[in-house]
Image 1 (tube, rainbow, N blue to C red):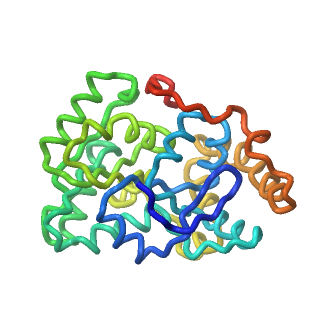
Image 2: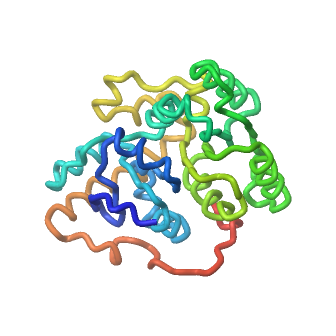
Length: 271
């Protein structure tokens, strides 16, 4: 659906220029929310399926202080940084008294997703999270498992699906199976948020987030998994933004694949 929100274009991504308060009101109408950070934007240059998912998302909001600063550098200041981990708790608190909002959590470990469910429900004083599931490794390539997940979501009565599987897996899974989730109206791709809600993973201090250093906190916390993402794959982002500043960036020339429009994209290509 067309959201009629002003856009800020950075490299090959159009980001909605919107305040959190406005997004909280609008999203009740339904739709898919994705929250790009620097890692997403660099992946989007190489992953045609991921780009297609982004093209078809209803809300694309800034998840990164670095992207926020880049918008200022490019002369198109974004109104507000809206990270998935900040937006999700605001969302369930905003709709705590709305009986039509019922959430299913998909992701995390079996322990963390249940901890998140219990903590969220305690905060809003009702069963707003009505179902959870921690999928096994490689589930996205197992059609039987994916159909089992769809059945569990449909039978839960949930109207909101929050998927915390990491990018681009979570976005691709939503894109592939959204049509089978008959009662879900709102799809939220929320990354590490389920573990944050459970208390299993600590977020960066607010001052680090505001200073654009949340990536450093995550890198120090998990260097083995994240060093390549932040130190090798993320650095070219700054060069590409500089090219855009001087009107030298071409999305066609600076991506490895052109935008295809396939009718079917197999989930076996995910990740």
